[in-house]
Image 1 (cartoon, rainbow, N blue to C red):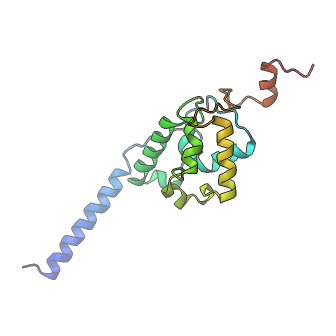
Image 2: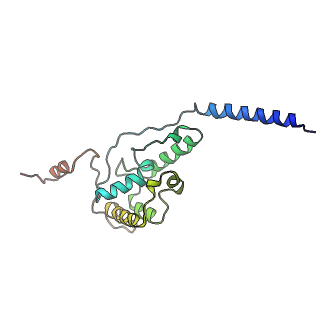
Image 3: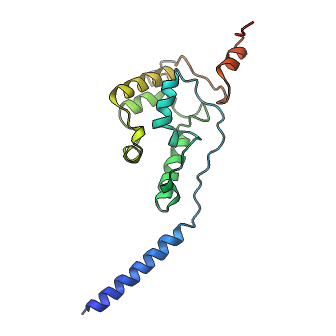
Length: 174
């Protein structure tokens, strides 16, 4: 038969073991690196890029802003896993990569950004007018799954200015 003292002693040991385990797992390394930006799409507008930055860049670019909870295990494991999977599927910093033609449809269907991401990142929740404008911008930037070609596909380097891009295309001011 269990006594109150025995139950409390067992709970105390379980608590101690749990705290020690929680502290110990903090020392398991997690890759939170941000590789250099190689190239990004030639966005149809600065607005589309701004929406992508708000709703997509943390998981789908090399410009991830790692929040405080990404440093606390076991949550850090899940965050890092989401980012690595997101970059592998569609990375806006290593363009062309991934499935750009699916971007607009995925956002329009509400599959992205992930709902658990928007719970903590309210800036990623786009209003209906913003969402409509973002989807249209993604379609112009990447094309669509139906095979429409995008007007603005490019693999120009991220740091390159519009003036330099125009000079390379033979459009000089002279």
